[in-house]
Image (cartoon, rainbow, N blue to C red):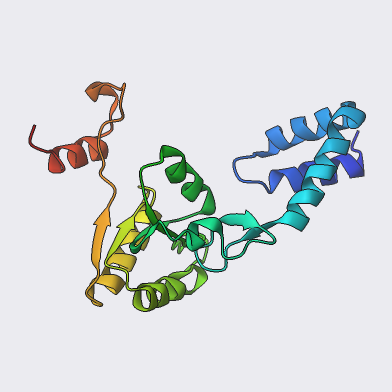
Length: 199
């Protein structure tokens, strides 16, 4: 038996990244089973997010509504000549968690994907080129994913910036720490061999 409100909730949850139809249905059922414990706090958290969370007008990272540009863009101790380009704001959080990169960031807010109909004008490329020009960036570090769409995006970004005389580097690839060679795919092994370093 179908309940329209529960179906609508499952559809809404299914729009989130990484949530398939079955997972969305299970989540919706759990929320319906424990409304007092789960729905109230979720509604409060969603409202707070809508009111208090923004994306930085300069770099695209997550920031508070009253702090835009974000603290990463306004921190004078950061090296403005080095710009790390990522696909999504969550990538900024991952790199910041390491604590070693002291430059600034630029989130493209996606990648080129002909299948989804996302071209160069659908990501923040123009803003990137403008920032590089206006902020005196010497090096752009590409910290994009390694799928085909990300590779195409990286190639386009590199071409656009190299013709403007900017040094473009890329995160190193290799075998993950704690993993064995026999578990690595052919592309990872090939890149690990190509990027080998003297010890």
